[in-house]
Image 1: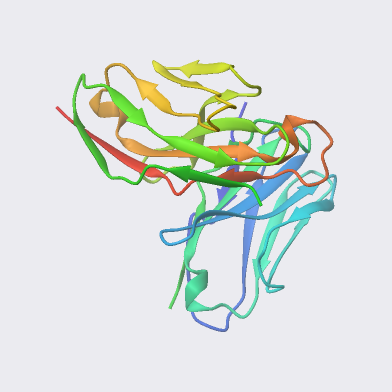
Image 2: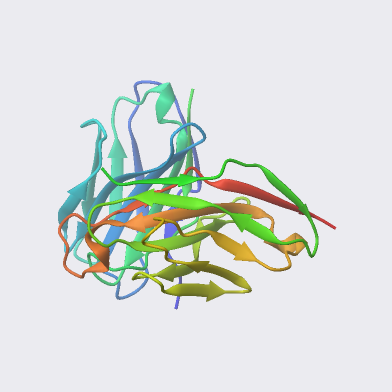
Length: 113
Length: 118
Protein backbone atom coordinates (compact mmCIF):
# COMPACT_ATOMS: atom_id res chain seq x y z
CA UNK A 1 0.00 0.00 0.00
CA UNK A 2 1.43 3.39 -0.96
CA UNK A 3 2.23 5.77 1.86
CA UNK A 4 1.20 9.36 2.35
CA UNK A 5 2.43 11.55 -0.48
CA UNK A 6 2.93 15.28 -0.43
CA UNK A 7 3.56 17.65 -3.28
CA UNK A 8 5.59 19.59 -3.93
CA UNK A 9 8.51 18.52 -1.76
CA UNK A 10 10.21 21.89 -1.90
CA UNK A 11 8.84 25.33 -2.52
CA UNK A 12 10.32 28.83 -2.52
CA UNK A 13 8.02 31.83 -2.32
CA UNK A 14 8.34 35.51 -1.52
CA UNK A 15 6.59 37.49 1.17
CA UNK A 16 3.02 38.37 0.35
CA UNK A 17 2.46 35.50 -2.03
CA UNK A 18 0.15 32.60 -1.37
CA UNK A 19 0.88 28.90 -1.58
CA UNK A 20 -1.09 25.66 -1.84
CA UNK A 21 0.27 22.35 -0.61
CA UNK A 22 -1.22 18.98 -1.45
CA UNK A 23 -1.49 15.73 0.47
CA UNK A 24 -2.72 12.33 -0.69
CA UNK A 25 -3.47 10.00 2.23
CA UNK A 26 -3.02 6.27 2.36
CA UNK A 27 -5.76 4.54 0.41
CA UNK A 28 -8.79 4.03 2.64
CA UNK A 29 -7.74 6.66 5.18
CA UNK A 30 -10.34 9.35 5.64
CA UNK A 31 -8.66 11.58 8.20
CA UNK A 32 -5.93 14.01 7.20
CA UNK A 33 -4.08 16.22 9.66
CA UNK A 34 -1.55 18.96 8.98
CA UNK A 35 1.37 19.99 11.16
CA UNK A 36 3.95 22.75 10.92
CA UNK A 37 7.51 21.95 11.98
CA UNK A 38 10.02 24.71 12.74
CA UNK A 39 13.27 24.68 14.70
CA UNK A 40 11.92 27.17 17.23
CA UNK A 41 8.38 25.94 17.82
CA UNK A 42 8.77 22.28 16.98
CA UNK A 43 5.75 20.41 15.66
CA UNK A 44 2.48 22.26 15.89
CA UNK A 45 -0.96 21.05 14.89
CA UNK A 46 -2.68 23.06 12.17
CA UNK A 47 -5.97 21.27 11.47
CA UNK A 48 -7.64 17.95 10.83
CA UNK A 49 -10.12 17.02 8.15
CA UNK A 50 -12.39 14.01 8.09
CA UNK A 51 -14.98 13.30 5.45
CA UNK A 52 -14.44 16.75 3.91
CA UNK A 53 -15.16 18.50 7.22
CA UNK A 54 -12.69 20.31 9.42
CA UNK A 55 -12.86 18.52 12.77
CA UNK A 56 -10.25 20.40 14.73
CA UNK A 57 -8.08 23.47 14.34
CA UNK A 58 -4.87 24.56 16.00
CA UNK A 59 -3.86 28.03 17.08
CA UNK A 60 -2.87 29.54 13.74
CA UNK A 61 -4.08 32.74 12.06
CA UNK A 62 -6.79 32.69 9.45
CA UNK A 63 -4.17 32.95 6.70
CA UNK A 64 -3.82 29.19 7.11
CA UNK A 65 -6.70 27.26 5.64
CA UNK A 66 -7.38 23.85 4.26
CA UNK A 67 -9.88 21.62 2.60
CA UNK A 68 -10.49 17.98 1.87
CA UNK A 69 -11.96 16.47 -1.25
CA UNK A 70 -14.33 13.55 -1.62
CA UNK A 71 -11.39 11.23 -2.40
CA UNK A 72 -9.83 12.26 0.96
CA UNK A 73 -7.01 14.20 -0.68
CA UNK A 74 -6.33 17.41 1.17
CA UNK A 75 -4.85 20.79 0.41
CA UNK A 76 -3.68 23.52 2.70
CA UNK A 77 -3.34 27.11 1.67
CA UNK A 78 -1.33 29.91 3.21
CA UNK A 79 -2.12 33.42 2.02
CA UNK A 80 -0.04 36.57 2.41
CA UNK A 81 3.11 34.64 3.26
CA UNK A 82 5.41 35.89 6.01
CA UNK A 83 9.06 35.03 6.63
CA UNK A 84 8.00 33.12 9.73
CA UNK A 85 5.93 30.72 7.64
CA UNK A 86 9.13 29.07 6.45
CA UNK A 87 8.82 25.54 7.75
CA UNK A 88 8.38 21.88 6.98
CA UNK A 89 4.68 21.15 6.56
CA UNK A 90 3.75 17.60 7.38
CA UNK A 91 0.59 15.80 6.49
CA UNK A 92 -0.59 12.71 8.35
CA UNK A 93 -3.42 10.34 7.58
CA UNK A 94 -5.42 7.96 9.72
CA UNK A 95 -8.23 5.54 8.98
CA UNK A 96 -10.63 7.47 11.18
CA UNK A 97 -10.83 10.67 13.14
CA UNK A 98 -9.60 10.17 16.66
CA UNK A 99 -7.51 7.22 15.55
CA UNK A 100 -4.45 6.56 17.64
CA UNK A 101 -2.02 6.03 14.83
CA UNK A 102 -1.18 8.65 12.29
CA UNK A 103 0.96 7.98 9.24
CA UNK A 104 3.11 10.87 8.13
CA UNK A 105 4.22 11.97 4.69
CA UNK A 106 7.72 13.26 3.91
CA UNK A 107 6.62 16.87 4.15
CA UNK A 108 6.82 19.98 2.00
CA UNK A 109 9.72 22.31 2.77
CA UNK A 110 8.47 25.88 2.30
CA UNK A 111 10.98 28.72 2.21
CA UNK A 112 9.69 32.29 2.24
CA UNK A 113 12.15 34.95 1.06
CA UNK B 1 -3.62 22.52 28.01
CA UNK B 2 -1.76 19.33 27.26
CA UNK B 3 2.01 19.43 26.93
CA UNK B 4 5.01 17.16 26.47
CA UNK B 5 8.50 17.82 27.80
CA UNK B 6 11.51 15.95 26.46
CA UNK B 7 15.09 16.01 27.58
CA UNK B 8 17.03 18.46 25.49
CA UNK B 9 19.61 17.16 23.12
CA UNK B 10 21.68 16.61 21.32
CA UNK B 11 22.58 13.21 22.66
CA UNK B 12 25.77 11.62 21.36
CA UNK B 13 26.55 7.99 22.10
CA UNK B 14 28.94 5.33 20.95
CA UNK B 15 27.63 2.25 19.23
CA UNK B 16 26.28 -0.40 21.65
CA UNK B 17 25.75 2.17 24.43
CA UNK B 18 22.54 2.31 26.45
CA UNK B 19 20.03 4.97 25.49
CA UNK B 20 17.48 6.80 27.62
CA UNK B 21 15.48 9.78 26.40
CA UNK B 22 13.25 11.21 29.10
CA UNK B 23 9.71 12.31 28.38
CA UNK B 24 7.10 13.66 30.79
CA UNK B 25 3.65 14.92 30.00
CA UNK B 26 0.79 17.01 31.32
CA UNK B 27 -2.67 16.01 30.23
CA UNK B 28 -6.26 15.82 31.28
CA UNK B 29 -7.99 12.53 30.88
CA UNK B 30 -6.20 9.43 29.67
CA UNK B 31 -4.10 10.15 26.60
CA UNK B 32 -2.30 7.62 24.46
CA UNK B 33 1.47 8.11 24.33
CA UNK B 34 3.79 7.73 21.36
CA UNK B 35 7.38 7.89 20.27
CA UNK B 36 8.00 8.98 16.70
CA UNK B 37 11.33 9.00 14.89
CA UNK B 38 12.41 11.31 12.08
CA UNK B 39 15.37 10.41 9.90
CA UNK B 40 17.11 13.17 7.93
CA UNK B 41 14.99 14.48 5.08
CA UNK B 42 12.02 12.31 5.95
CA UNK B 43 8.68 12.58 7.70
CA UNK B 44 7.85 11.05 11.06
CA UNK B 45 7.53 7.33 11.60
CA UNK B 46 5.72 5.80 14.53
CA UNK B 47 8.25 3.94 16.65
CA UNK B 48 6.02 2.66 19.45
CA UNK B 49 2.93 3.52 21.43
CA UNK B 50 1.08 2.78 24.66
CA UNK B 51 -2.59 3.41 25.19
CA UNK B 52 -3.07 2.94 28.92
CA UNK B 53 -1.20 3.06 32.21
CA UNK B 54 1.49 0.39 32.72
CA UNK B 55 1.41 -0.56 29.03
CA UNK B 56 4.85 -1.12 27.52
CA UNK B 57 5.37 -0.23 23.89
CA UNK B 58 8.27 -1.85 22.07
CA UNK B 59 9.70 -1.96 18.57
CA UNK B 60 13.14 -2.51 17.00
CA UNK B 61 14.73 -2.91 20.43
CA UNK B 62 13.25 0.33 21.76
CA UNK B 63 10.92 0.28 24.77
CA UNK B 64 8.85 2.76 26.75
CA UNK B 65 6.44 2.22 29.64
CA UNK B 66 3.39 4.40 30.30
CA UNK B 67 3.83 5.55 33.91
CA UNK B 68 0.73 7.40 35.07
CA UNK B 69 2.00 7.98 38.60
CA UNK B 70 5.05 9.87 37.32
CA UNK B 71 3.40 11.07 34.08
CA UNK B 72 6.36 9.74 32.13
CA UNK B 73 7.07 7.72 29.00
CA UNK B 74 10.86 7.40 28.81
CA UNK B 75 12.39 5.81 25.72
CA UNK B 76 15.11 3.19 26.22
CA UNK B 77 17.27 0.94 24.11
CA UNK B 78 19.89 -1.41 25.43
CA UNK B 79 22.38 -1.17 22.58
CA UNK B 80 22.17 1.59 19.99
CA UNK B 81 23.41 1.36 16.44
CA UNK B 82 24.68 4.00 14.02
CA UNK B 83 21.44 3.55 12.07
CA UNK B 84 19.47 4.77 15.11
CA UNK B 85 20.80 8.30 14.56
CA UNK B 86 17.71 10.45 14.12
CA UNK B 87 15.43 12.89 15.92
CA UNK B 88 13.03 11.31 18.42
CA UNK B 89 9.72 12.88 19.36
CA UNK B 90 7.53 12.03 22.30
CA UNK B 91 3.83 12.75 21.74
CA UNK B 92 0.44 12.34 23.28
CA UNK B 93 -2.99 12.20 21.76
CA UNK B 94 -5.94 14.14 23.04
CA UNK B 95 -9.18 12.27 23.50
CA UNK B 96 -7.34 9.33 24.95
CA UNK B 97 -7.41 7.42 21.73
CA UNK B 98 -11.16 7.23 21.62
CA UNK B 99 -12.47 6.99 18.10
CA UNK B 100 -14.78 9.64 16.85
CA UNK B 101 -13.32 12.33 19.07
CA UNK B 102 -14.06 15.75 17.73
CA UNK B 103 -10.89 17.38 19.05
CA UNK B 104 -8.30 14.79 18.27
CA UNK B 105 -4.72 15.89 17.67
CA UNK B 106 -1.18 14.96 18.57
CA UNK B 107 0.84 17.16 20.91
CA UNK B 108 4.60 16.74 20.44
CA UNK B 109 7.68 17.38 22.49
CA UNK B 110 10.47 19.48 20.98
CA UNK B 111 12.42 16.45 19.80
CA UNK B 112 15.78 15.00 20.79
CA UNK B 113 18.57 14.62 18.27
CA UNK B 114 20.46 11.36 18.75
CA UNK B 115 23.81 10.79 17.09
CA UNK B 116 25.45 7.39 17.37
CA UNK B 117 29.13 7.15 16.49
CA UNK B 118 30.79 3.93 15.33
